[in-house]
Length: 138
Image 1 (cartoon, helix red, strand yellow):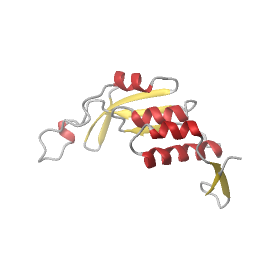
Image 2 (image 1 turned 60 degrees about the vertical axis):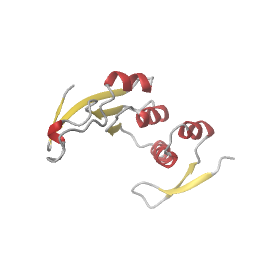
Image 3 (image 1 turned 45 degrees about the vertical axis):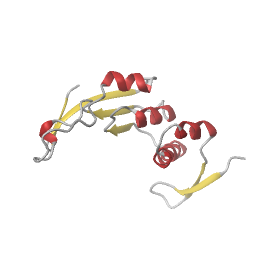
């Protein structure tokens, strides 16, 4: 018998039992340094699936694709949008007192897709933003 965790249904007053994470999911969480973050994501995806909630998934700020790969492995049948500049922060997006920020530059669309592996249902949206106005690069 699989242990269950009781959670209130999304937007409803009933309670649903959600199976605890299986060994495969647990082992894929362990490969990351933030067990609670990835465990929470896994439980949310399990609940969405258990309640038959339709729709796509999206991630804003992909960087190297660690969360993207994890999420896509758990829900490969869902369309999954990946939003990022894949080039780090643009100078125009930095605070005025910051002249340069090299974080998040060591990535690319190609590197992220290679890291994720299975590319079924992935939709990459390379975006650049200036202030409140974002425009699509793809």
